[in-house]
Image: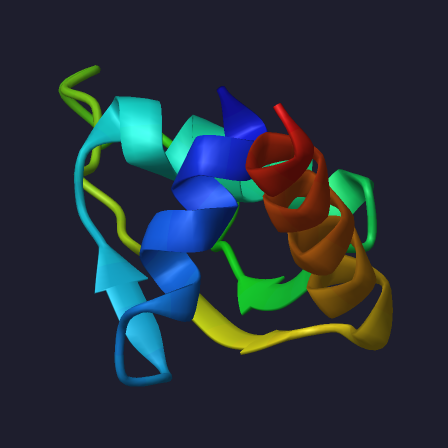
Length: 79
């Protein structure tokens, strides 16, 4: 889930770099939701059609992201 990954990012020293395709996709989702600012290079292929390995770098958690984390934490505590 994206909120769980956002919590993982919040516990890291920023900038935080991710390497796996699944984590890069999670960063894309968080960035699209404006919860983080991140650099994600466009995907591409080498001339011989091999996928080029990329990474993503999370620069910061936005104010909207911090608010979402606080709400998620509050909801968890209330249960």
